[in-house]
Image (cartoon, rainbow, N blue to C red; front, side, top):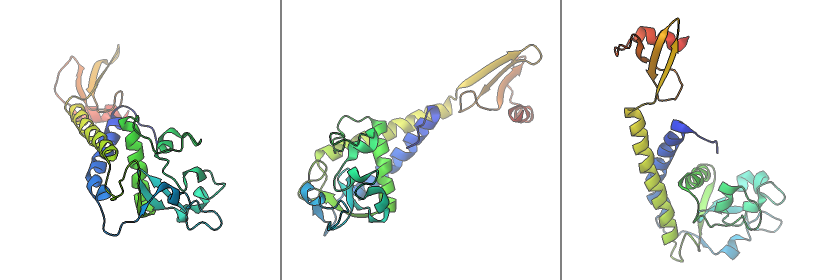
Length: 219
């Protein structure tokens, strides 16, 4: 996932996490006839000769990744993700046996958001085929308390991101510069150091000058 910074970080967190919160109910709720896997059964779906298929799991949700076989089949770069829930490795990049696990209990909000973004990717590009009984889903196919905790962190982070974004909109960061030829200039912009319409220029008037501001932003 691409890195974000400053306002871009909060905007990305707010938008993506709010979208995630809207999807939780549909993604985590029970479904009639849903297929449930035990880890040992899922391990048979590694895409090798004689294997029944090529599946991987993320946060307990199982996807058929056969269309992306070249990425996940034995010997491929992401073959370690096949036949298991390796949620943690999606964030850490640790493809060792110790890293290809489903324990996300100590991940930060931004790291869980990365997982949610990956979940959106698989929901969009691959077929959802069932759930894994274990850390995230019980034998009844319903979410466990640990998955509910992941959901709560995402939801709280979405709200925090929304509030931070609103504050930035109300009180955008301001910039100032001075030169002997032009005098002083103050402008406020959602992007620190970026172009913005001047709020005060020259003698310090607070009147907005749209024409002059646009010309300066373009120069």
